[in-house]
Image (cartoon, one colour):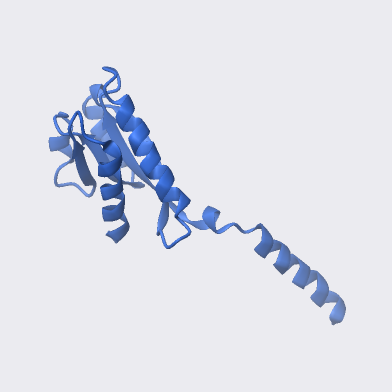
Amino acid sequence: MGRGLVPRLFLCLLFLACTDPRHTLRTAKIGLVAPLSRGEGNAWVAQARNAVREWNQTVLAGRPFRIELIVYDEDEGPAVARRLLVDPEVRGVVAGATSLLVPSLLDTRLALRTVRPRDDAGVATKSLLEEVARAP
């Protein structure tokens, strides 16, 4: 009886040591739709990435999931909205306030924040993340 117990305890301890809680968390996606082809959206991408990095660094401190940022160029047109809407892991979108995609994202399951050209997309992203975290 004692012989079988030692290997089982060893396997249990090995499993616990190899299990990193960050890998067992769910991952949710948020989209950033920015004017990349015109070069104006590069600052937004950097700001949003910083906000997501901060979120993910504190994910073990009570955050319900990790975030993956997906970035699209708003000049890709309606196909971007379709991609965002059909992906069940996408929980929200940050887009330019004047983007033609905004009307197609209103009244959908996605949380939405808009950004004006000189706004900080990181602030909008943080606000979006807090809303997404409160949603069921």
